[in-house]
Image (tube, rainbow, N blue to C red; front, side):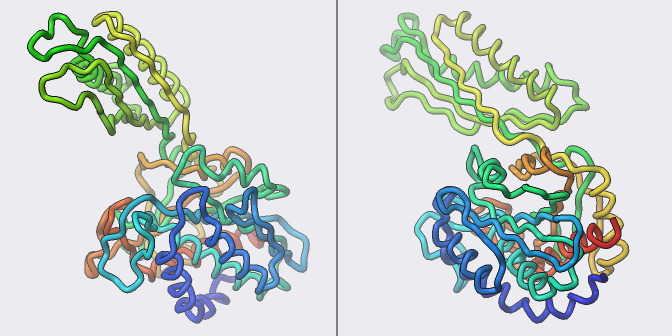
Length: 393
């Protein structure tokens, strides 16, 4: 079955896709709080006759379109949660909720998958197999929503899975992916330093937690620069540093938070080991108590080679209106990685930036927005991958 059959239907559905997206954009919900978003999706699927169920605690929806002919089950995933950011865009569809907005394109992912659901449900009599629709909560917040969706049966009897991310650093009309490691693992660290406070004029009588924290930040940066092979990408970033509240008091307490990003399990484990050693030794050196809490977050997104080859083949064969490129490694993380650990699949980026309309703000920015026409491309890409797997695989 050719993708061309659905191009006109995508065009006809596009105004509805924009309407859905803007409704979701105006009514965002944070991770693990997506009650109304879940109900919105659930009602759409039921209205179209798609067998669906809400996942645990009513966060997220799992739907199944049953084809009339035997064949594989292809899973398609969209994330649905928003971020704790105040929307600063001057548009009529800006978020109506204080300090909550869709600042990463998840509203577009959801709308794109809804369009695919409607199209394939209307043409289920021609499907050689089934479609599993995964509308996943809590991609933005650890431990993420993917594992709960898997526990709720999202991947039961699934043969392959695909997902996309609307990506404003790429211009609309470009799609990209890469085989193997694609997006980084995402770990978090929290360091508590306990010294002995005192008068700022008598530093020799104290154990200065602020000074020790500053030294620790410098030492942690040496992990990547001096303890990791320069050919192995890795990032250690301190995001927050809190100590003291007065100009003339040496604080006894200091807290440091940050993130570690890598692309291999070996480097990931190595950096964690070095973290532990450095914290222990700096504490000994300055006579402070240092407690390290290290949290392993999402693993690396690793695309399967065969399915990534399918991405490039489908692009050349069916997506003549799009530019298909190989992606560089991306230091951002994604819990789509958990699905790829269970079944073969491919995660792909769909360009959604537009310099002409000023849609160039980065993801997670208060003025983030994307070119809505990119949703057409996301639908085309996911449909192309699905049909190719069902009929060419």
